[in-house]
Length: 160
Image (cartoon, rainbow, N blue to C red; front, side):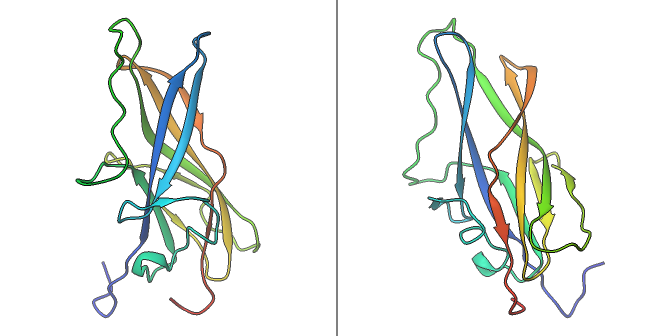
C-alpha cells in the first residue's frame, strides 16, 4: 500500500528502437532515448538519465516505449513503400541492470508489463548500467530478442 505521507514519482524515460534492414536482410536496430516530455536525450549516460530528474523523488528509473506526441519533431517511421518488404516491430520485454559503484544487492532483472513499461531500482549515490531487451517481430511473428547498448542511469546523494 502506498505511504499516504509521500507521493513517490519515478523518472520515466522513453526508448525508441528504429529497425532497418540492409540489402543482405540483416536487421539493424538504433535506439533513441527521450525524457517524459518527449525531448531527445543526446547522450544516454548516468548524467542525463537520473532518478531525480523530471521531478522524480524515488529511487527508481523507468523505461517505456516511445509514443509520438502531437507537435513532436520526431516523425513516425513510414510504412515500407514496397509491399513485399517485411514490417518489423519491437516491444520492450525486459531489462538487466548492474550497479557499477556499490556492492549492495538490488534486483538485476526486471520484466516489462503488458504496456511495455518497466521500473529499475537504483540506490542514492550510485549508477547502474542497463541493457534493455526487446522482442523483435517480423510481419507479426516473433523472430528474435535484441539487446540495446548500455545506457547508464544514476541517482543523486542529496535525497531527491
